[in-house]
Length: 368
Ligand code: W6P
Image (tube, rainbow, N blue to C red; front, side):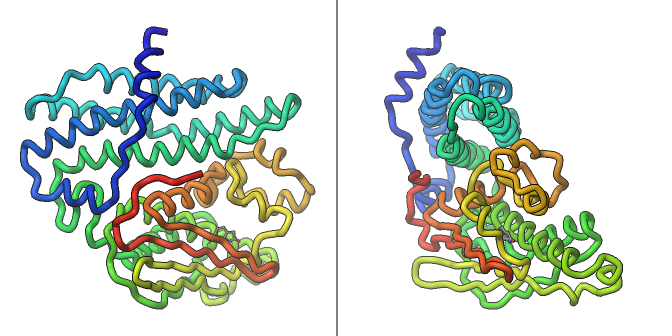
């Protein structure tokens, strides 16, 4: 098509990466010139990052890029064109209109993760007869890139709003403790709605605040707490009989223990549940896309394979998603130099370690 040259041209450039501290430095004491400069950066940068993904999508087999993934491709091409064709940003009026476009693009692409999950499921179904298909690193790259694009777009949009403690979407004094409490409250509500019980959480230790994007941390902690609570509830109802369990109070569930620690460079959050751990045959798959622990019990019943599990996604309640929660949480943790590790103690429970950089000096992105 007519865009091919433009895509190739932009894809020759490498993305320009920033650290959290650079974004904070740039975004504070904002004036008109800096706002225009910020818009110009996004104007140049988004097409570069999109072009790389467009090329990636084109390199996939035909039967993968149809349905939901073709839809993603179309959304990306449209975003690429609309940003690239936007006039040179010269004054505040240009900047204002460009910001409206950015908001629009962020909203438009809200369902990309869902499309990716459905597309992956379809692709794996189609591929099973033909060839061995491993799309994990492709999906990783799609999601890492999406985290980055959304961050730079939302950062620019949010520079217009001044909130205490924030520079754009970055909280210069993000409290892991507070974030944990908020995620815990939300998770308790979800858990109670789904199962009619609550799982107690005990929090120990305290840490300093860090420069961070609260949304990223909230996503990670909510996801991990949901997994932990689900494991504890399922184990509880499996071990005890249902009638008895209903008579027992909240304290009969073994608590999830959270420990917050810090060193010179990192904050670490360890979340320990006594949900029985993760069965050894599925442990190697838990960071794979499309694998959902919601299917754990059913798999044990049926002795199924991961390939067959991916066929049964997306009908789960709010405690389980499309099998993207855990791997996506890991990418969020890694995006600014942190990490996420999981240790299962077979038959007992699971420990998850979330490491977060506290210096703010690590470049965005994840090497895969
Ligand atoms: C489990 C499975 C899991 C995944 C992520 C976090 C905690 C847990 N606990 O049993």
